Every structure is written in C-alpha cells, then in structure tokens.
Length: 156
Image (cartoon, rainbow, N blue to C red; front, side, top):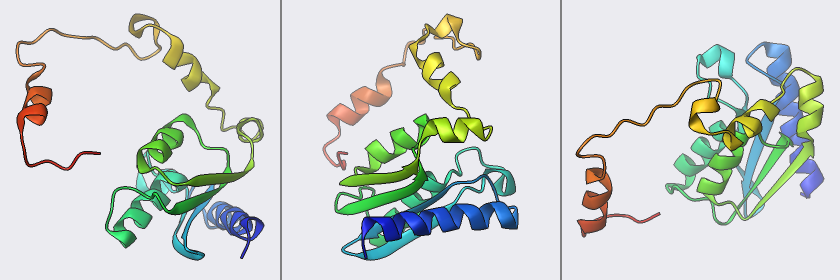
C-alpha cells in the first residue's frame, strides 16, 4: 500500500463518521511496517469528550496496540491538517511521519476554524478569552523536585 491508499482510508473514515452521526468530518489511520495499527474518527459529540479528535483517538488506540507511549516507527495519516491539540499529541507520540489530505483552511470553510487557538497561544495569560491565573503556593515545585530526585522513573 502507498501513502495515498492510507490517506484515502482516513478520508473514508471521516465521511463514514459524518454519515453515521458519530462526529465531525475527520479520520485518522496509524500504520506500522505496512500494517494498520489503529483507525479512528472524530467522536467528540457522541463521547462528550472534546479531546476525542480522530488523531488523538488513533494515537491512543495505536499506543495500546503496541504497548508503548511512543509511536516512533509509525506513520500517521489524517484526513486534515491537525489542529493545535492534535499537533501537540502528535509531537508527544513521536511518529516518524505525518501525512494529511486537506488543510486547516479547508476545515475552517466547513465551520471548523481553529485559528483562534493559535492566536490565544501568543497572548499573555491575562489577555486570553479564558482567563488563566497563576497562584503562588509553597509546594508548587514539589512534583518536579520529586521527579528529579526519584531513581525509578520512565523518562519520556
């Protein structure tokens, strides 16, 4: 199989998801060694989970399938250029490549515009639409100190 075949499958998943009412028009496929490890559709509205984007769901399934939190030898195919959340998840999962079909501007024309998130990231915390407040507490660094000092840990 080639890249276009896997991208076509991601697109099929997206269309199936829309037609079945499971979520938005997004699909993703994760492949390792020429075999599909995971497939997913956007199911935000049916799962009541705002993180249930196709890419994030596929990453969760693929990681479970291989028993690892990293997808270093995997390729992610997605029907659309990933949103900021999915982009972050992709970088944390560390696949070796990502292929996408449509661009985020195509999603925006269908009502899925995530440009406001990119704008929010560049704003100071006090200027964001959802206010973020930092509160000084004495143990704020304790989780990080514990992490640094503990010998038995899995670094990622």
